[in-house]
Image: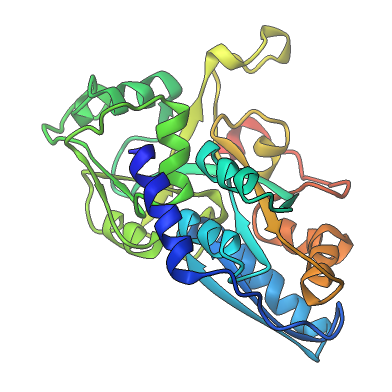
Length: 308
């Protein structure tokens, strides 16, 4: 799978070529195209909107795509800046090294990924070991997760095979062969909409979508007893993807959000990086249900009852 992706990536770069975009006038003025993986689309759009509100002579064009395609655009010099919820993989790093490119990355948020089900599904929580069994094909039916009255098979859905959420779960759980009950959609929205209509479906999305306008789905609490010290008093507990639990590193399915850039001169891209890593950008991160990476944060403490 990875070898095929490596070939496709080189072919993509050959087709697009290596032409740089227009030179930006200043860090607060001009036009900038940003490619963002769909997992972090809400954050990318919010950052751009806030930046444009502050700097009225700046125009940020946020284009939503898959994580792999976003990287392709950056490595082909088709954009100066991308947002991802993963780091570059070994194949992408190899291209950077082979072409002797100068690529910089900045961690701007701490987030992760969540597992969603229909609100009428009685399952409320899941263990890391159960997730592993799902991907290994050892758990296939809802009754094995505790829905005793159901004889339905579990159907798992991702927002695309090129998405960072897909890459995360395959790498995290060392998936060598995809189970036959795993399917993909083209977008996160279509994944969520489908889950909202099917009680036997399970979806995988970024936690940037946690506590949003989607009323017919819910995020499962996740537990990982092997990851916690007994001294923390949380061994055996389950945690929602709320900011407090991501910040305390209690929520198990964590990842960070990065800006990757090939900035060659001072311009709008460098201004956007400064904004995103600064006070005002980090406030946008906080407002988007993620944890700021570069600024001190004040997260309201949740008690155990508020986890649900």
